[in-house]
Structures are given as C-alpha cells and as structure tokens.
Image (cartoon, rainbow, N blue to C red; front, side):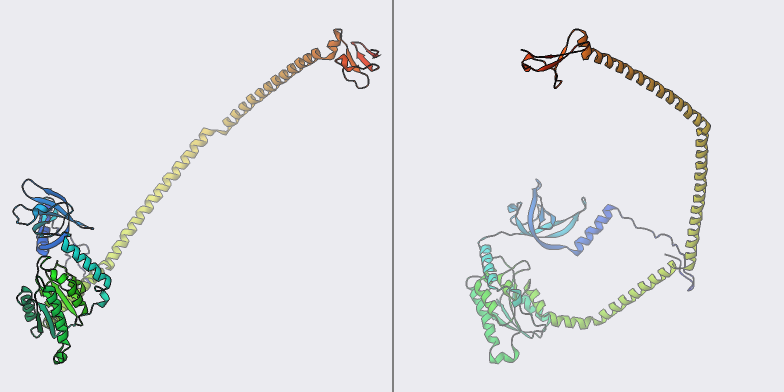
Length: 467
C-alpha cells in the first residue's frame, strides 16, 4: 500500500511498491476447488442418458451422463449397494443421486453415484403419455386457465390420507410457519384400487362445502391435494382421468403436491400450481404470512446491512476519488511532461543527425557519379562510335549498290536471251494477223484470203493466204 498522507496536499508515494503475491500450486488450487464444490453443491439428484460405459475388473463402473447440451463424468464404486446396477448400459436413461466432487489426479469434476432409478417407458408410462396428450389437447393444461393463489389464505382444504406422512409434513410446516391457518381435511385413500374415485369425490366434497350457507362467511381459499413419494404404481391414482377432471372442474384454486421433487403426475399438470413435495406446498401456501413476519423480524438486520453496504460503497467511491486525485497530481503531470520533452528532444536530435548523414551520403554519391562520367570522355567515345557507324553505313550502301547492279545485269542478260530477237536471229520467224497483230500458232486458225504479216530478223513480209 502507498504511504499514508499527512495533509490534504501530501498524496503519499505516487508509485507504491508491488504487493506480495500468493502463488498456489496446481494441487493446492485443485484441493481448494474440491472443498468449495463439495461444500456448495454436495449431494444432488441429476438425470440424463448413459454413454461411454466401462465396467472395470475391480467392480467399479465408469460412465458419462449426458443430455442435449452437456455431459458429466460418473463413477459407481463396487461397495455401493445400488439396485439394478447390472441393467446399466449405453443409451439407458437414469436418475442418479450422488456427491459432486473433483478427481484431483485429472482435475476433473465428477459424480459419485449413491442411488439410482431407471427411467424406462413401460405400460404405465405409455398410458400416462396418452392421457397427458389427450388432456393437453382438450386444454386442461393451458397456462391461461391457471388461477393465482391468495397471498394470505385463512382456510384451506386438504385432500390426503389421514394416516400418511404427507399430512404430518403439512401440519408440521403450517404449525411452524402460520399457526392461525385453518385446515379442513377431506380424508381419502391415495393408493390402490378405488383411490382415484375417492380423491375426485373429496375434491368435489370440498367444493360443495365451500358453497354451503354455513361456511359462506369463511369460505375455502384453496385446496391442497397431496401424498408422499413412491413408485409410479403407488402414485398412479393421481394419473387417473377422473382425478384430472375433478381438479379441472374445481371452483377453488388447487395446489398439487404428489411424491418427491422428481415425480410428475397428471394432477400436477392440471392443478393451478405444482409443488415438489408436501412440505414445499405448505411453505408456498404460508409464504405470504411467513415472509411478512420474517421481513418485520429481519428489518433491523436488513437496515444494518444496507447501511453497511452504503457506507462500503461510499468508502469505495472515496478511495477511487483519492486514487484519481493522485493520478491527476500536478507534480505527476509535470514529470510526465518533462519526460515527454526529453523523448521529443532525443527524437529531434536523432532525426537531425540522420538527415545530415543522408545528405552527406547523397552528396558523395553524386560527386562519385560525376567523376565517373567525365563529359569530354563521353563525347569522344560517342564521336568514335558515330564514325564507326558512319563507315559501316557507307560500306553497307556500296555493297547493296553492287549487289543491285549485278542483279540488274543478270536479269538484262536473261531477258536478252529470252527475247524474240534472239529467236529470229536463229532463223525463225513470227507470223501475225495483219489486222489484229495476234500471233498465229496453228494453221487451223487461218482462213483463205486472210492477210498476214511475217516478222524476220531483218524486215517484215506481208502476204495473203491462198489455201
């Protein structure tokens, strides 16, 4: 931390020494994460599909639990008494209870399985899905028909078995959170043959009781239909259509709390509100009164917490302002300006020296090039080249003229040899038509009486054809 200021103008050290860092090893960090994960998450229920199942010779089973978006490594140890472990396989949908922890050797979080429930589609499940689809099509599950629960109910109806664990959980929770709440019990069986009919009859009975003139001044605010956990067969009474119709036709809002958190029944979908457990339903019903009482009791603590939070925020703001004031200290600004000035001075000096070096180098290069060029020598060389080229031009012109003269004399001799004078000199003559001057080459082309002209080496002879 920086040195504490002694006055309003002493801002302490502008650059405090670096704080000591705490460096953890990988093992220490993993151990801390493991303790935090086991403390914050602990034992949970999780559902998914099994993949990458590996059964080791030691008896331990390793697999991955996945859904559409993620996956979780799981281990089922040999000494865990988990039912149906032999039925595990890839693609099996299961519901697992276990402890979330970290396998420190790989730094990987995993689930140690303690309990398991197989999730399959049997005859009851098929019937459940068919009835669910039918009622959904008729609009019994429509969200817009769900009615809000009263925030401060004074009297409720309870549909459950008088000997089951659910009624004890509900009464215990109501006694603890809202002892003034009145409960009207409509006893019925919640399991076995005929249980569905009794449940539906109890719901209708509470609706008739609510319309009675005796209870008109203190009618029921809602009805709680509940029972404890069990298998799908145990909870089947709440999946019957007669119960769903009774819940749908009830004029009083209904809360359904059947089984454990993972159990869903048809009555849950039709009811105005579904609670995970009977105790959770009782907590929801008494939430308004309980929350109000808690708010009053906790008001002093809440005020203290908010006051401390406000003071902490103001303290943080003050510290931030002090830090900003330190950063904006005039001496610091001056030092930064001086440092900037030094940087600019150094940059200008380097630029000037670099410019001088570049100019000097350019001048030396130009002088060297001028010394190498020497104009008089270049002119002399160009004159010699010109004279050589001129002589070559004269020689080429004379040779060309001789060649053309020789070709002319040769062509003249050939023309002389091939001319008609040479033919006539050898004793031949040329006979032509006197009128047209056409050379005659065959006797068949001559007619009697035609006048001819015959050319000899010396002179011409004119004649007329007799025959």
